[in-house]
Structures are given as C-alpha cells and as structure tokens.
Length: 369
Image 1 (cartoon, one colour):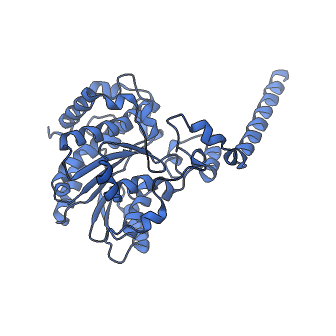
Image 2 (image 1 turned 135 degrees about the vertical axis):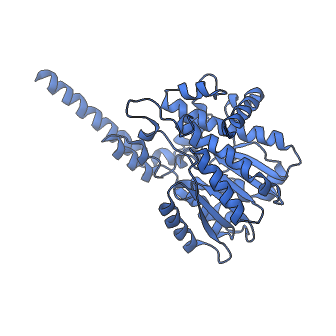
Image 3 (image 1 turned 120 degrees about the vertical axis):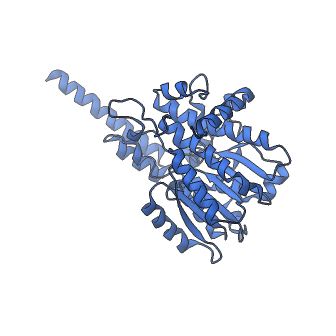
C-alpha cells in the first residue's frame, strides 16, 4: 500500500502541476507578453498556433478575401466535406466560384455541399464527387466523372484530402495497413492518389487562363525518415513509424509541388504551391483515437489555442485566389505557413534528385498494370 500511496501522490502532484501550467498558458498573459511570439520566432513552427503570431500582421486577411471576385471560375477541393477543405470550399463559393467537393462518403459529401450552398454566392454552383484517394480505381472513376460532367477549364485544384495518425493506419496485428493497390495506406491517401488525379485533370487546368494548385501539407513534413521519401515500393511499405509515415507523405507533397513547377516551367499558366494550415480545430484530432484523459486535454486545446477552421483554411485559400500576387512574386513551388507567410521547407525538400526520383516512382505506381 505504501508504494501505491506514493504512486497516487506523485500522480496527484503531476495532475496539479499540469493543471496550473495549463491555466497559465491559457490565461492570455504569456501571449500578451509576447512569450509565444518569442518562442516561435526562430523556429519552423511559427504560425502553428495563433499565439505565435501575436502582434504580427497577417499576409492576407478575411477582409481582403471578401473583396475577391471568383464569379465564373471553377474549383475542385478534395476532402471538401470536413476540416480545412470544407472551410476552403465555403470561402471559394462565397466569392462566387463554382465548387466541386470530392469526398469518400457520398452522404457526408452531400450534407457538406448543402451547408456550403447556404453560404454561397448566388452565382456559385456546388457539386459533389465521390473520391477515395487511397484507391487508384476510385481516382480514375472520379476523374472520368468530373471530365464528363464539367466542360469548363479548371481554375483551382485544392489537393487537400488525407488522413492523420490514428487506428485506421494499422491492421489488427499492429502492422501498417496497405491500400487495395498494395501501397502503404497513408502514402497512398495523402500523396499517390492526388498525383494521379492531377494527371487526369491536367488538360482542364491547362485550359485555364491561370490555374492554381494548392496542396495541404504540414509542418510535420520535417519529421521524416533519413532518406526523406520512398522511391521504391518496398521502402514505402516497410516504414513502421506513424509520425514518420505522416511526415514523409507531407514531405512528398512539398517535393511534388516543386517538381511539377520545374516541369511546367517559368512561363506556365499553372501555379503550384503547398501550405501548412497550422494546428486547426478539426475532426482530424478525434480520429487519432487518443485514450482518456489525453483526448479531453486535446479537445480543450482545440477550443482554446488552435486556429479555427476558417483561419486554418485561409493560407490555402490565399494561394488559390491571390492571382495578382502569385504573378507579381512568381510564387511557384513554394511552401507557406499561417498566416499566408512564405517559409523555407525542410532542406530535404530542396533535393532535386529526390524530387525527380519521387515523381518517376509515383508515375510507375499509378500506371495501369
């Protein structure tokens, strides 16, 4: 009983300590004193939470967004039924763009579309498209459906759908799950499916006066294996670290944006960039399957120190709508963080050899066998 009593006492002290610490952090005092701004000033995590930008002027605001006219333009948003994808779709539709949200679950997709329509500009049309980016068959079907039902050029392609770390990443025996195509599920969902979708829709993007592709990446792209990203299937499927799995899928997006920009050339009408939305209050956290009391703690943080959905989507939306700035600054293959600030991606993302190898590997993965 003595050991049990001591353990309980230590536990009580730890709970009290974290309760006090949390109370101090969320009191607003550290923010007003510039503690978070100072702590994040020289790190690559700046912009991850709102407190890190206290007193810093945003590069693009909701007021500027409200002045954007997107009437007559078209957009496709993958994963547009929830999270930052949903809020990005809302923002585009509010400014007049006709938006197609592509989602895995048709009923959730239609419910989200109905909600977007209520907020949309009178000239905006909101459509749905069934798409599971983990399945190459589904991506091909979605691409064919979109091309058959939409004759207009595609102006904005937001490659946003994805999965985070959670139970769905693993099989019952603890091994990493594979997609129906035999590709590690997270790599397939977050990256490979989008590669194929782009290739299918490229002709419509090229018909636009100025097409914009935006990939929802993450600051987590910095946490990846020593080799960066896989360039063969065995390596892709051998990774057993969940954090690295997520990180390499997000690094792949940053590499992809740069490689596609290089292939398209400096005079292309297509502008490709990636963005970190920051820590956003979204359903992604619920899917992590955290046990009690950690899930309660994270839920509290979601409500208190994370970006709201519209705020998390703002940097992504900026890269989709700020056409004059994209042209003036020639923003191609860049990486942005909240709020709409250009940031250097991880050093590995600058590896030209890796960019080319990843593209060639992915091309091989999506070929019809």
